[in-house]
Length: 243
Image (cartoon, rainbow, N blue to C red; front, side, top):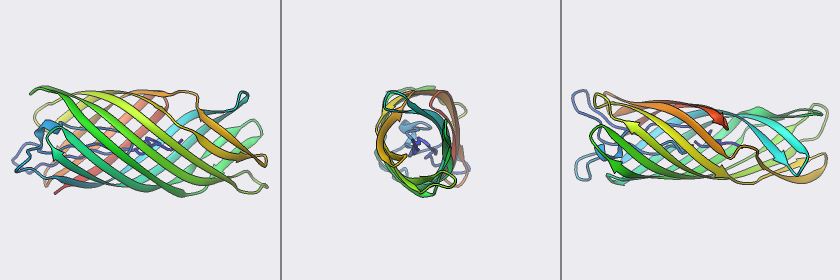
């Protein structure tokens, strides 16, 4: 499935703000469920309360339809993301975007994805707070719709829903660098039309294990990159501006 940040893709993006001479003040949660930086750096009265950015993600996973039909899925997606940080320990996020490439590979051929809309809602909550490290819980619900096509065959509808829960542990290095490790569990149905019949599927692997790096930049900018080699595989990156 597509991850906002699913498909995950679940894209993703760092929400942080810095100035050229100040430490980072705000961080948030991505459309793909990626919490980045240190939420404790946000200051309720003085720091920015919003962040706007863009994120991209590419995923590679396996789907199961019924008991015998399996497919390898790749998808790419981009999102525009708006985050609201009401307190130093909470970030709320809305992501809107589109998937634009990818395929479902089955024994009878490769079904190419057409571009389609995607959306996500995310929450990140900080539960460990120390000068040198932090930990967060993340929750992301996402949706995507598209069509697939096998050469010489009619287009088929494809709709995916996903709910993802995650935990992340990171370090605060020289104020603006925040490497982190992550673990996520997720699930949700995929509705597809295959060989003229409606089928329902889900991921073979309902987890992700990976790592990332978020960095604060001058001018209230931040960026992040993330790699997930275990479970649902993904590569994500993005850029954000706090205000």
